[in-house]
Length: 102
Image (cartoon, rainbow, N blue to C red; front, side, top):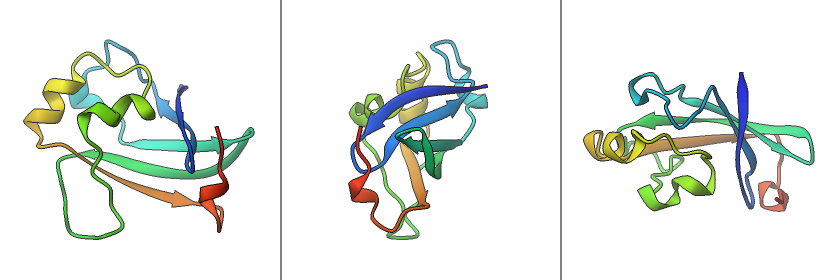
């Protein structure tokens, strides 16, 4: 089941699969969906580890997780540090994602 996360301006509302406070971080589903005004506007990947092989990826700091992931599972801070962070990549179905609002 997909659950609503948080809305990040220029990305939209993030939805995560089966995300809960008690989610086991070793089974965290790495894909997410993004919606704006009820319409699917993109999807993305949030993988454990910092993979700096492309300029298209982003590396959110731990403090930023609440900007798109709600709730943040209780295991996430330790998991973040154990894996050296996260790598995210967004794919938009919109030529001007900066117009996506919350």
